[in-house]
Image (cartoon, rainbow, N blue to C red):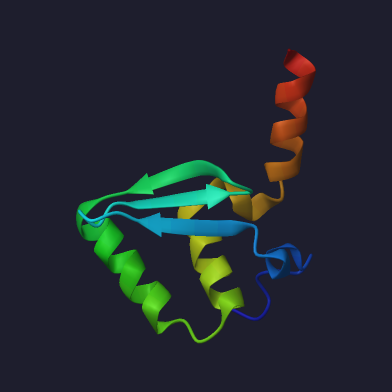
Length: 85
């Protein structure tokens, strides 16, 4: 995973997650929910998070789960939304 975060954006810990009593995972980016996981998929991701040895690895896991955040367009997407208003 060493070459995945070339721009060092995940060092800022922009992703957080919450787990509910029924094992639903809410993944947030800068405080806004961007992905919700349930069932087997949620269990799989929780295991990967528990096995992560650093906070940076957790950030990489969460970024991969959200999908669209790997291309660096997360900044442009929020900017474009504000321009459309």
